[in-house]
Length: 296
Image (cartoon, rainbow, N blue to C red):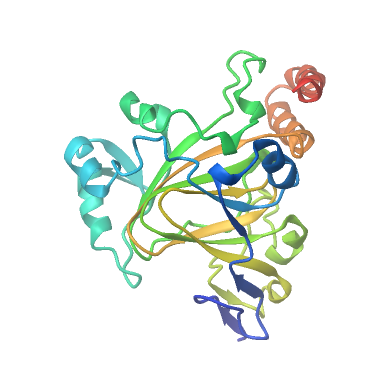
């Protein structure tokens, strides 16, 4: 059996994919011109790490494992298909090790958590904008902006390599600890054996230990490996495959987005989903979203 293991730093062995450390720009927000940022990164679908964009957030420096354990320890959450008290889960997270990682609390919708926590991460940083999903012109009840929290311990990792649904952008804002991300551009999709029923998710069960006899095309993939530190925001453009591994106890917040570069793909994906339960609604929605994209 031919197997390749993705381990830290540099390129993988010759028979495996090329994973380069770095390879994504890291820039200070206070030194960026917003219009140039939108042109060169957001609308160019080019990933970037922005430093300092969330310096205005009370959560930065405030949100720690101890903060959540003390103030929200009784909050009910679900991780690894099991219900936990948040305080109990954080106890596990603090002693997490790569050989025995604690359950990873990921994709927690902030609008389902106590409202004062959302105030700690408001307003969203300017590097996430323009975000068409925040427009009040979207049809009523079509809330499509998802702000999510992630809390995990050393050695935990996101369950699967994927790109975000509806071809939305991802903005990953690090508040505590260090995470490592793998990212691959959209033209690499054929190397990841997308699932038939969910084309934005790989069929490869463990991206860090890949059986090349079963998934030989994976050996041709070329991607980047980067670390995300507190106060930094990683922009992952629509269609970019990515996944994460936690290097130290970490807390992250994310938001999805749509801009000029992914507006058409978003409209196609979203209307396809709507059509699965209402063809009439999808038929009416498509031209409206097309006109809205042109207006925005």
